[in-house]
Image 1 (tube, one colour):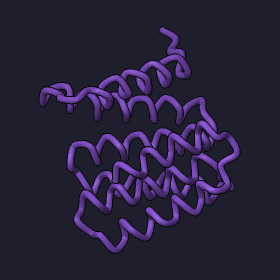
Image 2 (cartoon, rainbow, N blue to C red):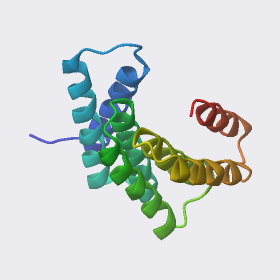
Image 3 (cartoon, rainbow, N blue to C red):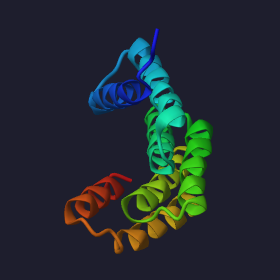
Amino acid sequence: MTINHKEQAISCFNATWDLIDKKTRSPEEALTMIHLAHASRYHWGVVGTPTHFTRGEWQISRVYSILGLGESALFHGKQALRYCIENEIADFDLSFAYEALARAYGVLGDETHKNLYLEMARTSAEGIQDQGNKNYLLSELSSL
């Protein structure tokens, strides 16, 4: 049996988004959301690039933040930022790595670090070339 890792990564990423977008989720859906995000990141790890790794770690961090699991959100947010720094990934992805950390620290009740990373995300947003991506990031930051 041959696995198409790219198709699996995309499918799991999109299915995770469907669950992220739900207003309410059952406990089973919450668990599925965690598994899908990790599965997407796994498959990108086989066939993707550092940008895919960054986005996968960001999505995992977001899932854990939504579920109130701050330590896990923080761990994966730090991974997203690490991939950005090590691979000189900027623009949208760097801004969202900062957003993930701000969100994770918010879940943990650490307002000092939350505000620090929120400001870093806002500053980084100034360098986003695509106006749609910039507006999307700023709307996400406003939810914090």
